[in-house]
Amino acid sequence: MAKRRRKFVQCPNCGYTFEEVNNYCPNCGQENHDLNVPVKHLVEEFFESTLHYDTKFLRTLKYLITRPGYLTEKFNRGQRASYVPPFRLYVFISLFFFTTVAVFASKNLVMSDTTSASERLKTTDPEAAARILQADSLARMRVGFTFGDTAAAPGDTTGLIINEEVDNKFRSFLENEEQARQRLLKNISFMMFVLMPFFGFILYLFYRSQRRNYVEHLMFSVHFHTFVFLLIMFAILLEVVFPRISTEEWVFLISTVYLFFALRYVYKESYLVTAAKLLPVGFVYLVSLAILFVTTVGISVLLS
Image (cartoon, rainbow, N blue to C red; front, top):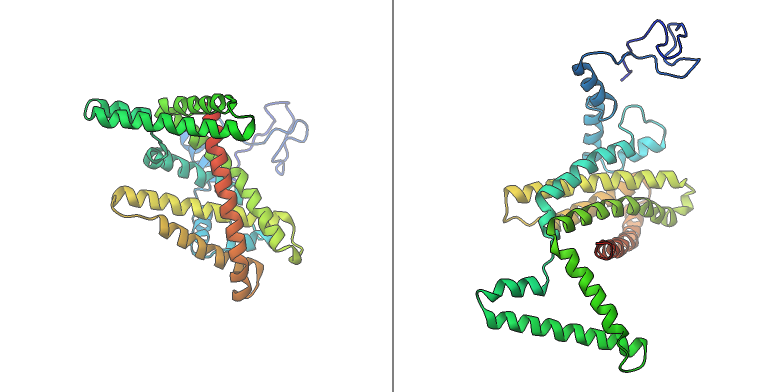
């Protein structure tokens, strides 16, 4: 959709006299577009230009959901004007995704330690609280001595000191549950942004015989992760409405089926070859996701 311009006769920045064809000032580069209009027009332009509020966004969303790989194929062929650019679509959907997670699912990120559990039990079951504290102390001593024995000579307290520092960091991280959730969500959003180009690199390795540019694989990864965000967001909202429903297995199954058909559509290989490549691609991706997630949690704790 072409932008509707409200053109000046003269450039308000440098005074250059415009010709009808000038969309930008040839002298200073300022856009020839009057923004001194009612707020309603500015809001309409915002939705039109940045969020693609118009039919282009709805068309893109429809093909993203119903035709795996279609948008990637169109982008790689250069047929891009009719659809929202991949990164703009990803940013728009991810904003809603992380907002949904923060509002409805972030409580699942809260972890409780043995100290808080024992404190709650003091008023109800003092004996149970004492057993929890004793077990926690013994466990930390065993870990500390094991670390000390393997890293240095017997009796070295290095392991105990390091273990105590990590334990203190962990407890400090849990003291403020809201801050812990926000830190995790922020770091997880960054983790997903790192994972996206890495998944593109995985595809580049597995499909290097097709001699495609890395950007083509990256666009596949962007579209795939955008769909997964939409799917998880829908699953979270479904569990909010129907609390007894568990959607984790369905999210994994639908994502796997979607990935299979997207790979088949974009890379034009047989169903058998696509299925054979899906297994190692999926395995490497899941291992990478697990490593990145553990690393993200560790960094969140250490930086708390």
